[in-house]
Every structure is written in structure tokens, then in C-alpha cells.
Length: 341
Length: 223
Image 1 (cartoon, rainbow over the protein chains, first blue to last red):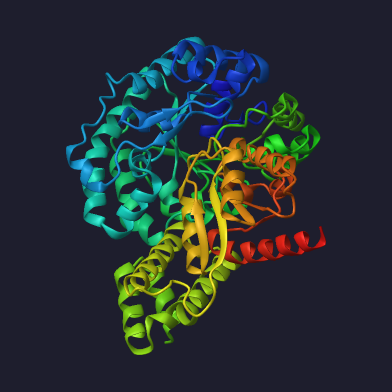
Image 2 (cartoon, rainbow over the protein chains, first blue to last red):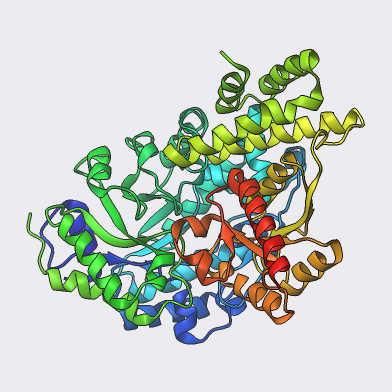
């Protein structure tokens, strides 16, 4: 099986030659190609070269398009800062208050260079790998986008204390978001991974998810032209996972390393794919043999769960992670062999 | 229902106005000067304990608690009274996000809860180089520096702050508190970056800074 066949078989619940593995190695490609991060996160060809190196080195079953949320904030007018080893960040958000949204002109997904960077990168990666390896792009859920434009604190304050203002912001964001994501699908993204900050039990209450986040998500997902994976955003999500089931376009969930995988499976049901594994930060903190042992434990526990993928939760696997730790994930998956239905 | 439970209920609902109304009513009877010590501090303690033991409080709820605390401090200041009336001010201390880290919300909430507890806080903002932290601590006489980081890559930059404190011969005299989301994911990271202590959330910062301040005094006396 190649990676595309393996992931499709996982989605369909069919037997596998081995478990699929999906560490998030977007950033790691820059380390492998020794590419300065400013070039890596602005030049689609540089990023695509990095992902070719990732594929050659680690043979992951999913390749990741740039995980660079700050670049979205920069497209709205935020000030971007490039750093030596992490992805870019926002020094200053584009707007300081909800009132400024009234006059804010949203960036055009078909024309803004910061947004075209994502699309052009996907196109290059899909052309080179798309027949054999799924291409994923990680973009926050629509309710998280305003945090990239005005900062988390101001957006949280708006959602909490100015619901009408929050809704008016989302009325502007939703059409932009749908165009952006459908553009990624048209460019060749196999699926879109959406970290769910404003659905995370670490960030918002169930009431906020029910009243605010989920209705927006449902509205947007119904308009998308491809499959979506909902992501834990680096914190346990189990306590709110039930609020994220039954949404259109959603085929999979990525849970946190601290979530109980058996309970997560019960909540999402038998037909959705479940990604689980180590947090990206911990992959770099452990030894290679610890990574392999922990991955084996997880895979043993999920042995009869045909729709399970061994992944990493949180953002990118960190720059300083030893390569043998990443190899250890694949080694664990290979050693456990075939997955029968 | 007592005032603390009522206040927690308002905060759980994200009802900042309702929480303020409740506190105003209490203060009109007993006085704003007692509001911090008799109502707000114990309530924040309960919220923190609840969050830590059961995970039942979210960032949103703690943010509401922080805004209510800020509102109360503002009202006390407006009455031309010290926010720490009835108890001597603590500190000063210095806080900020470590170099290359721009996720401000965590350290801002730490600042609010520290001020509510009576600390004089110098907030240096985001992306603060190690030398700037130490210079400010020396300038103000701070015995504790609080450095925040959200991601693993930026958390490792705290090692530079540790080195700067040690290089200037200030270890022990200046205590290093570290915190941020990644410290919850990676147990042991606080030790790895050279922190003298950490708290699991912003509400635990006041206790941590109390401990570290006392440690600094003890270490200096021993030296």
C-alpha cells in the first residue's frame, strides 16, 4: 500500500498493511533542507522542497502544508515576525477593537500574497506527492480566525461580553473562510485539519461551544468541498468532543495525548477516523526508545480499532526533535504489522 | 447562598456585570476596603482549586474572574484608596513573555491576579530579552521574575534568562518563576529551563510568588 491507499483504507475501515502514521512535520522540512524560516514561510517552492525531504527521510502517511496561522493574521494587516526555529508569529495584531472590524477590508483569498502562499504550496506539493501521499493543510476553525486578527484577549472579551459584536465579526469572516478553504481543496489539499480553540474545554465553556462555536462551524462545514479533521489544539478535548460530532464534512478527530482513546472512540462512534499519539512537544523531550515504546503501547491498545491513525497532537513537531525520535513512530507502526478488520 | 458561591456562579456564566453588581451590593454594606480580603481573594482561591482539581474552569471563566478582579481594583483606586489597603504592598516583581514569545494573555492574567493579591507588578510585555528582565529587576528591587512562554521552542529561551541571572551572580537573590501552556503539557520542563518554581495556572501565581519571595529573602540572608 502507498500512503494514499493506506489513509483511504483507514477512512473506509478496510484492512491495512500497517497502521498509518501522521506526525506534523511541516516545520521540520526547513531543518532538513537548512532553509531560513523567512524563506520557508514565504516561498512555496522552498516549503515544498522541505516536504519532499520530509517524505524521503521519514515516509509519513500525510504531508502537511504550512502550519503558519500568523501568516493569516498578517494577511489582515498584522505585523509578522520571523524567528530562527519556530514558525512565524504576530508581533502586533491588525486591529485593536471590535469596532475596527466595521471598516476592515478583508484580504482576498485569490489575490493576497500571504494567502496565495498557502494555496501555491499545496499546488506544488499535490503535483509532486498528491497521487501517493495525502496533503493536509492546518487552518483554525472559523471562530478562531478573529483571534489572529485582533489577538486572543480582545476576541475572548468580545465573545464573552459583546455577543452581537462577535456575531457581526463572524458574519464577515464566514464567506472569507469558505472561499479560503475551498481554494485549498481546489489546489489539491486532500483534507483540512481544523484546530478547535473556541471549542476546547481548556478555553471555553460548553455553553459557548453550543451557543456560538458549533452553529458557525456547522454553517461553514456545509459549504466546504472536501473532508475536514477536527483537532484538539494542544489540550484535552474529550470533555467537549460530543459537541463536535454530527457535523457535515467531518471525517476524523485528532485528540490530545492526555485524552482516553477508548472513551474518545465511544464518543465519535465507529465510522470516524481517530488520530491519537504523543504531543508534538513531548516527541522531542523523550528518547527514541521511549517514543517507540509509548507508540507501541498506544497501537496495542488500539489494535482492533481499524480507523485509528498514530499522529502527533499540538502544533508542529519542534525543530530540535532528534530525527530518530520521529523514525521511532514509524518503527512502532511497522513492528505491529497488518491491521485486520 | 453565600457571596462567594454567588460570585462563582456569575463568573461561570460569564456574567461580568452581574458579578460586579453582586460585589457592589456587598461593598455598599461592608465597604470596598474589605472586598479584596473577605470576598475576592477567597473566591479566586476557590476558583483556582476547582480548576486544578476537576478541570471544570476554562480560560474563559478565569478571564471573566480576572476582569471582575480588575473592575474591583479600578473601583477601589477610584475611591482614592490603595488596592492593598489593610495590608502592606508586596513586591515589586517583574513579569513578561520571554524573547520570541508573543502570546500575552497568560502573563496578563498573572499580572491581574498578582495585583489583586497586593503585588506591585512591572509588566514588560511580550518578546522580552533576558537582559531586560534582569535590568528591570535590579532597577526596581524585584526579587522575583515571572517569565511566560506558550510554545516549547520559546520556553527553551527561558534558559537564557536563567543564564543571565546566574552570570550576574544573582541566583537565589532573584527567583525565576516560569509558566505558560507548554509547562502543563511537559512535566519537568520548568526544571529543564532553570525555573525556581511554576504554577499550573494564573490563579496559582500569587502563592508561587509568595514562596519565591520568601526563598529569595532566605537565600540572601544565608549568603
